[in-house]
Length: 140
Ligand code: CMP
Image 1 (cartoon, protein in one colour):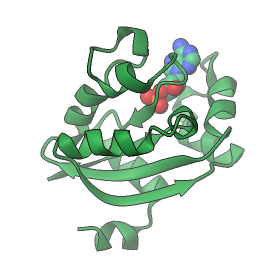
Image 2: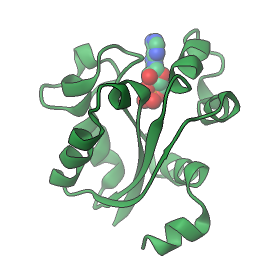
Image 3: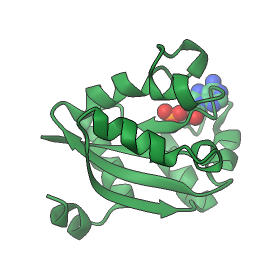
């Protein structure tokens, strides 16, 4: 089994889509192994999206990700990383395939419903960003 991280983003929380998104992921065979509802500080959002620091959308992204609560979720299944990318859909909901989470629940390239780790290495880093080693071990 592989693990990946998803973040249910502020737009999904505001629209009360968190339950539907979690149900969608469970139907796709993902196990919810750890889950945390929180509001990111500016420093946390800046750090999480560090790789995008030079991009023109960085400040807006940080403002959006701190605009309300999020839920960070550790998910497990076979091929969790690529499977979540498939189920999540393209970054811009307008380009996401029908039936994907971003097509169903996203509203713009920024307010795109959920995040999903893009590689097993980043999944490991991102899981440790939100969850302690003890929380991840306890989830096994
Ligand atoms: P995510 O997959 O979480 O990774 C980076 C986030 O930046 C992305 O989802 C969007 O929320 C946001 N993003 C990516 N590209 C753009 C863009 N061109 N304009 C605005 N926001 C973007």
